[in-house]
Length: 215
Image (cartoon, rainbow, N blue to C red; front, side, top):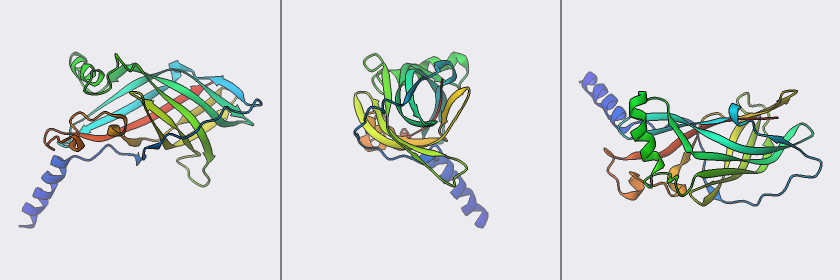
């Protein structure tokens, strides 16, 4: 009897499907941003060395992974510390990394159309830094970064964990994997909040992991 109950529980968990892993980052109203002080140095984002990784999942347990390119950006540094800046995300560069190459086109095409990110009308997303705070005593993050994320002409502020370092080669800012709710930016296709049944629904949560390099 115990074995049957354990098997039923395991099947239930697989059927429900876990949301992508990572710290849940709540979207808030947009916050005010200010220009960095005149003493701050401006570093150009190295787009060839910068990228965003993503994970999306269904309630059935299926998930897909991929990348999005950073097309340009500038980061402001003062006294060896990141103090501001912004970067642009090229939404037309969405790629899938888990499917065979001959099957990636359908998924990328769907993510790019009006059901999801509507890249013909909204080819860019942006992130503008409003505040950078030092975090002490955490080996997995050195800072929190608060900024405005704009997608599909909707701007929300988020606060994300980050590992920020600077040396003679430039500045590196990397986040651990974190999770946002796509519906906050008007991406509601196959969402349970829009009435989709769970066996056909896609999780509202999208996991992101950002790697930025600037010099």
